[in-house]
Length: 179
Image (cartoon, rainbow, N blue to C red):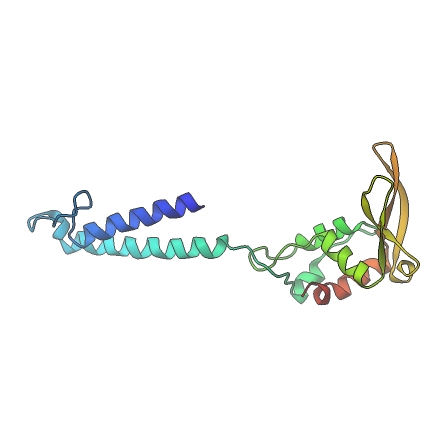
């Protein structure tokens, strides 16, 4: 992206010199009898320099990543969640599928879990190897959050899942939590 912008800027400056009657190779004035003094040649060159300037501006605007999560009511209603209980990362994936990434920062399961932990709805445990993991607690059940024992690489763990009540709770509060 940076290289493309640099090349566009170099091209613009070269065309601007030619359109202004300056030889871009040695910065000397172009002779009066040159075709480059013809208005039918000069006008399109100035048009191209304006076009390139606009393209550079457009590219730099779209290159900036949004820093805040934003979701409209329509986008929130368009989130399609599966009927079965799901993990927080699947929930975040489904939300990210409907947001406009040029306007909104993407969310992660970790961001949502952090908020739920701060509210006391989820907890965090550290295992014997020092790994942190999010777990359901006594308050979780009232919010539609449950645990399920899973196995990964021969190791058992408790996966936090959101049932229908939990998914509705997440959707209802998502905007407020992420702002």
